[in-house]
Image (cartoon, rainbow, N blue to C red; front, side, top):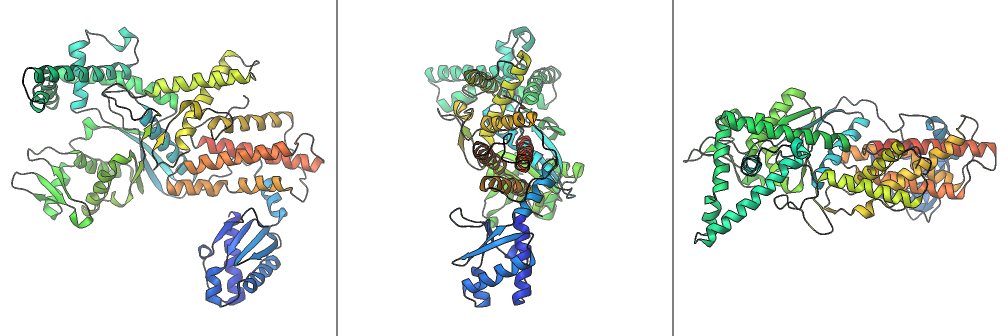
Length: 590
């Protein structure tokens, strides 16, 4: 139980003993005391003043005195400011906390909850490599899964690969037209980049053909339909759906190139999945549920044989679930896949990490699943996140103006190398150690910058800003961890006496460390890694202030040295674990 909950429990019990009012701990509002007032935590009295018809100062005095008398090990003093009871936590409580957790490697983690959660993320297309937007998605999905795992949930990480459809056929046709038999191996181009280049070539050729047809007198609308390369692509899609052997062979071959490329990127950025679903295996799912929905009256069939659901009473509109020719649409496939995943894994919650342009789609998905009474329905949760833009604006994959994930990671590692060499503190590192360090700093900067922002917000990514060793960045935190480890290499704590009092900065650091499990719980419940990122950054700042003010190796007494070594050890552990749930490594030295 953390100190805030202890204050709530003690206060609720005291109000019962003093005034015979029954309250739950969550009925007591407790905040951190404002810096301008004395105290650590503040009990807000206003709701009890009206209930008890007591003056604020009298109520505060009675409650504060009672808490001090009953819990001398927890409280050492109090004061009252206009309806706020400011409580000072006893140094003895904090000292006990430090000694109990300094060497506790599992500090922050929670016991198993019995809850099972699926996190679906990444969702790439096999016609192009992963890009900057995919990086935010991957880092967010992986981190949410890791935070949930750390807080006691059983986790299943999944990915749905969009490996079929007209956009995939565009790359295939372009390779047939312009590839001359080239392969990733023959050109020394990574497989996903190789196929992505043909997607761009398709669009270049398509634009050219449309212009030629328009110049010959055709309307633009008709030209877009009649362009030979588009007609060939549409025929290829029909041939794929019919299972034409040579088309299937080309499809499998080109997709295999992409998967080899994806695997390299995933391994480099630290993404992994327990199960991968492929749209080519799932796009027919949901047809039986359409029939079931028709029989239940959830869906209606129109005169042209198309099937719809009317969601106007739910504040939405009518939604197509099956075309007039009997083929399914995306929402139908997603309903079928939701049912299949639930049968396979029986999860309590299924989190979809998908951009906010799909907010409407996931509202519809959840509503339809609920109306069909599918077991998966109530657990559907759309973790909607904002798009990532560059200082220059939006990216467009058709025009080849996206920032490839691989290129961006390379750029980040290169910036890390330049910045580190400027600092000139790694002259004794071997070549292999330097390569690992630059990778750790570059990837750490990238992940931290993309995760430090509330997922729901759109963001602008600036590579140079993300790698500043002194700002709100991953490298600043990594550097703080390396400084602590440098101290601990010279002198480790011995679990000895740490005295009986704390100086203000020692106490401030201790209070912040004690909040780590609560921060993880909050991040888990809100599916928001930025809570952890902000907390770890503030902790690193607090430690830097503490370390600047107080010597550890040359502390005033042996007790103070032991206290500060234990604080340093606990801080290093919390930084390492906090960064780990964000997918970020922290170096032992840098």
